[in-house]
Length: 259
Length: 353
Image 1: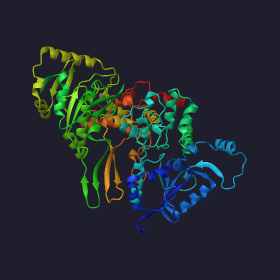
Image 2 (image 1 turned 90 degrees about the horizontal axis):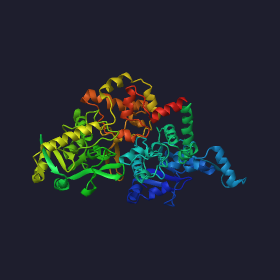
Image 3 (image 1 turned 90 degrees about the vertical axis):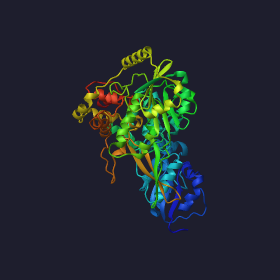
Image 4 (image 1 turned 30 degrees about the horizontal axis):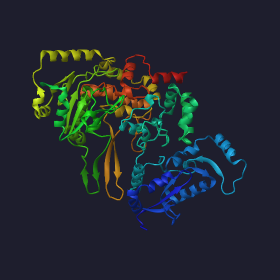
């Protein structure tokens, strides 16, 4: 292996594996990807994986078992830079949308009082609940162009500048009518950009699958939807679907601001 | 100024002749209430019965995303692939004024070659319009055009009265002079004046723009800005749809497997959170209210002192776009002391409940 190449590991925790699959879907660029970096570990595509020291670890999925907590901590120790790769790793994903109480009730409903012997399940959380994360790349799954841009910049030693933008920016570039103005509950203003506004392009409202965008104003959108006649619980459910644990921060801020 | 007449039935023939070596851009209807400017392949797709397109014609000069140049450690290759010969047909007076404002902006201190070259290669064929309830161009004096176009078509039922605004416009007419009639009758002139008179009466909204620079100054600390900031979704749509907003961001896009980068440029908006962020993590306008102040200072105050007219051309796009009713009309009216029925006013009452 080339000594000059950065050592990279790609790891999957709990999720649909769509983000890791996305990398394999970069068919035209696959050779460049494998030429540009020394991919040490990538369970989805190869069997000779080495779990040694890494320059960069891409971690996909949320943390849902005690075993995964250990795995994750081990990755952190071995890697200089850890990247939360995709929505689940960044904010917890759909599986993290329950509050702690609701999670416990659901767990009991499904598993009863059975004691797990292999590994114990824990409430689903994003990886930054357990380790320090250097970079985030949200997406469900991460967009191909978004990944290639990110990957190339990271390889050059200069990760992309943080510039959070909501879906609305690309949605307007694409000259879509604003769905909110038509009374359709679109989460574009609250959601990180990167999907190419694919749903609004087809007249479907954004469901928020890229996760919450920094600098969003959920408070205003909440009241806007309420004014348009939507039920409060329905709005909360809609807004929390993909917001993962970041929803807690959302509503925490929301409570503070509404005082 | 030369004025000629064109029979409406000859319009497509004329467009066909002039667009042989250029892309023809014109408004196209996409849904009952949505028009956009598009490159025309089929003339029957052109729809002139429109008020405003979603994005203004600035997208034709400078696309939302494009590469400026490719750079390596030894080489630099400018990329002007967004520039080609273009004709914009069916553009309304407000949007022509916006292009004139952009012309001044992009050549004021530094000449922007990406804008300049695209503009030099573009012919502007304006078209008359009729205001809807959101048009404000009479207040901004942008409902009539004196400059900035090559030809301007005024719709008089079965004919167009065509104003020739430049020698390039004149050249177009000369490609097929037999289509045009130079004799304007008294009846035509009467019709033209009557149309204009009726059009001017059709405006439903107005703003006292003369008062805005002083009011912006006087009300800079007004609680109004906090109310607006509370409701602003920070979605950036107001800037994207504004025909005079011109801020952009530049990004380094290295190419995988090669030792070079594309340096790309995309539209930016001052209402986005990181717009005023700088190296080291400092952000001068973290608050949404501060960012809105910047936007409206630009629109209602600083352009007037710099270029002699507001940056607003009264197209009404921000009015139809902003989901929370923050737009040049409601902001101006509020600065002028009027109570306006808006989402952001209702939201602020929700807070104090």
